[in-house]
Length: 486
Ligand SMILES: [Zn+2]
Image (spheres, rainbow, N blue to C red):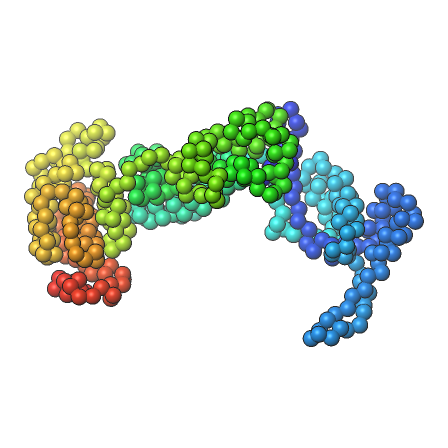
């Protein structure tokens, strides 16, 4: 933040193109050459007597080692400034003066100057901590994400697999950059478009129409989304922390700077920055205006800054969904979870939806060949699915009618474990019917309903072995054994 304030106005068009280098010097104080210090003092025209005094102080250091509580002799130092000596920071600045007077025509020349500086002074760059900061730094976020997605290149991954990758990328890369400054809108749009394209099409630049709107995907799972972070809102939330800092007068240099130079005792909530304040500060003020009502109404300044609370406030009043335990049930396979999510949102790509998008003219159900393939028909009303549901109910020993999701959510089952297994069986059934329908469409092969149910059973058994249900005692375990689930 300080760094950004210091490079304030670097991007003004009226200024010549410029760049700022942050260079961390390795063991700076310990490795400075005395001859170099002497030359610098002379070059900067310090009085000869003073130069002699300084060099006396610096070069007469001697050290002793303490080993197992015993001190061992004294030996003289050969270079370096003493840590903790009040004179050392001043002398170090004198040495650094050499570097600031190096050729700054271009980075390359600068680097060359730095290398010769290294040779003369004995100071070396710590490459891990150094950085070159330019105005176009933001684009690195997009490049990094695009690069990573190209690297995955996994078209054959299921939606569930891609979702994990998109979530990890949006949640780490964009969040990491968005924590420091307000990302430009173009950058955020690009990040979102790349993530969206990868989720729905498996590549970074596809124009496939998404099944569900992106802002819906970016809701938390309990509000009906996929739990992908909403980048613009998260960015505002992260920057909102600086509003909290300024409001609470946090003890740090940047906050003091802002109060003394910009705000000058004015009220934070009515304060408006002028055009000659730094870009970063103006961005912080923009965020401040956006969050003001939240800060005032919920008294966020009276407790520690909660990213979670602010983010939820920005998302707005979204209703919690009742179907979260069904869709994101941990007994189910992740790919079943994803289809179950499309299923409850009524977004499975059935023939009916293709007609709606005017991709096809008429869409008869592949499984029965009798009626139009809507989502309700395919999973409930079709004679084929009807048979599958009957077989599943018979196996589980539980019966329902009509909307299975609505039923299973409201079902008052004494054992939570048993309920989760029935939920997983239902979402497994939805998946396997969808698969049977696709096989019919592509290969023109009709699976028997019995085969579909066997597949549901197989997956469920496998999941139950992987999930630890050992602790489930009594009735549930007996019920599981009775169904040959374990
Ligand atoms: Zn049908």
